[in-house]
Image (cartoon, rainbow, N blue to C red):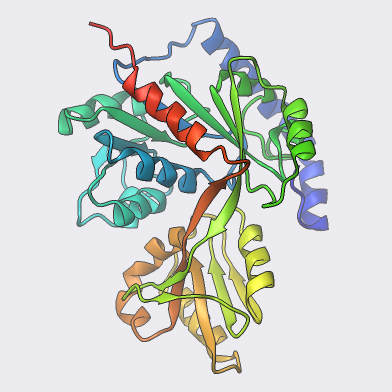
Length: 358
């Protein structure tokens, strides 16, 4: 369990009775799916699910982007997301005029970076998939973003992510821990990726983690770390390499900003921070607070830095941001032990060799 603050730890332990109640609900739900009392729907095309069994912070969005980059030149693919915290309901195909409020911050991030790829949202995936295929009949594969625990649709390939510093094997149910599904649900995955590992993860530690996770014979397990790219201006996209000459105001509303703060500890001269809740919807008063905090930094060589996920929620202040040194830092997973090709080949093979039913 990932307890970052003593007060939070105390509160979460006091909520233990609710965790047992939550665990019971999840157990009954999974039992109903396992016994086919509740049906799971299959579709006659490759479905790739990227998800986890803990809440937030495992790196789902960077992994979806990794898949987009590796697959879009080989197959017409589509991304289907729930569109968490959007203001709309039901199925929607993202268009060039879409906003984060309409489709959610993660789908908006995908659309901004990959405008040539089909992006759609729909909280009921069993309903949304046929609608997506009606809109984009040439689609050869669909990536389901954050859908592992939603068993109403059965994907052909499930990619389960678990964070190195908060492995599901060491966790407990919400609200005391971070688990939103049973630990044994990992057995439904075909691929397990331990994310946000140390860059220099040793072979011994890798093997120790494999023993702890205990993958089944048919499961593939990989290890990845975080790789940050050069920052770019939120409006004009001019690149900037962060080094120890910069003083930075970090503005984030993501589930787990810890890796980014560790990056700044190593690469920036110093940084201040404004941390908001995950998927936070920024208001004009928040922007005023950001500007005021930034102006209080005495250094002349200073910037504001945020994540790509936060950037799409800040773009509604485009006019105000033009005049600010407001930068975005991209992130992508880096596979360790030279296994990126093995992972990519596995995904391509799944799509290419998919057994369509006539």
